[in-house]
Image (cartoon, rainbow, N blue to C red):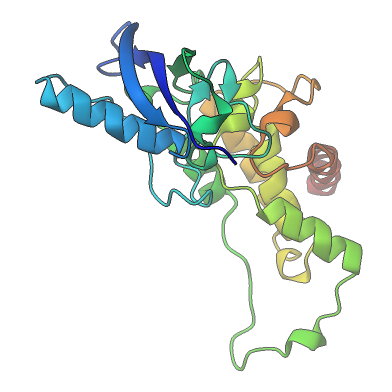
Length: 253
């Protein structure tokens, strides 16, 4: 693939804290390599700002390998940018061309208040996971892997649901800021496996209750969450969550 350099204009959201109104600031960058990742481009911008005696832009990052889910940005109106099933750290500058203007914003959700600039507080997800509680396991020697037969489709579906990295793109792209895709992936992951059965009913009831408590909106059935999920988590998990919740509710009566 041909390597090239480009000049860019960036319009980046700046916000001091959750109570600040916030605003866009415009920056110019020159000679950005097409082989840079999007976050490397931000590193260059921050070095430029520091060299000018200005405050750098705050943004989340950790693994930079598409695993941790930290690099959450809205780029030109799309969660994680223009490439499908891709995190921001995996997005490369060859997705853009010389002279482009790129607009970068944080996730927009009441449940994800802005900490600073592009960094949002996603601990609501942590509290939902914590609400799911523990998994009962037998103590003693480890059970042989082949001693727990699992249907191939269930194993595949559980593995696909477990791929969720909790980045929040589903919430950010939903017009109601729904967390249903995230919660359904976490519920499905355990509901499909033998290890998740003892707390199956209490888990789904508790996690949905916590989701509602955090202020996430209702599912809109537009499938925007699946379309912009960097791991391609299927909305079929939402249907499973609804079935699990209904069943658990009937059994609790």
